[in-house]
Image (cartoon, rainbow, N blue to C red; front, side):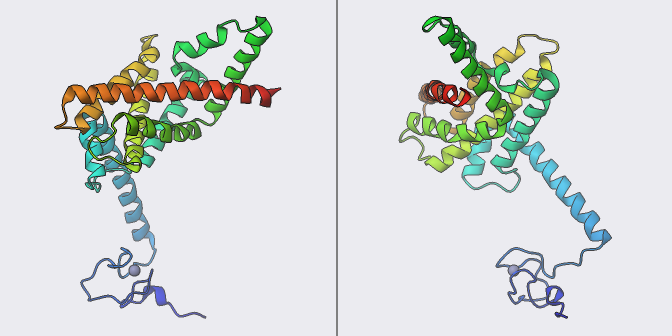
Length: 269
Ligand SMILES: [Zn+2]
């Protein structure tokens, strides 16, 4: 039988580092509480309460600030004031989850189609070389939409590097933001789009066209966020660069869609 070393009071149960004194509450090397309390009912109850409370508080904080003072929230995170926030990726995945659940409940699962600009559907209707060609392109679009609906989270994550690249390009040599930091900013902007999307879906029951406004509204919100982020930099320049960033991103999206159509056509044949 092995001795119960994990409950030893003079060593960290996690990394075996010797504790400094009786008043040490956390291991300085790995951050684990010292001594590690035994798992019993009171411990479990406390742990559950803390976890739920922390997540709720963090999520509520991040979501509110994301919609009220987004630029400042992003700058807080990037400059290291992170303790009161939920990390950007869990925030994005949570909001994406809400969009998927609501999309399934209210739109029958066609999450992507409801938000796609009219051009995507319109492009499929342009006669290429006769009815057969147009029909197969339409089928390819439908297949891609289907795939994106089923892999909504994956699609969202795949778009982040593109969005970050677009903004890195548009804000070249402004504010010393590196590519990984642009990834974080893009994550926030996408989460913001999902919040607006959620509101749009909820309002659609009463206002039929609310979904159509989500895309333009989220771009406007993104511009507002970036202007706030680059506080101190001339406002009109921030606006121009933000719009340029979104234009590059939309262009990349369109190019990618058209590049993927032949691939999907090949795969579905
Ligand atoms: Zn330790």
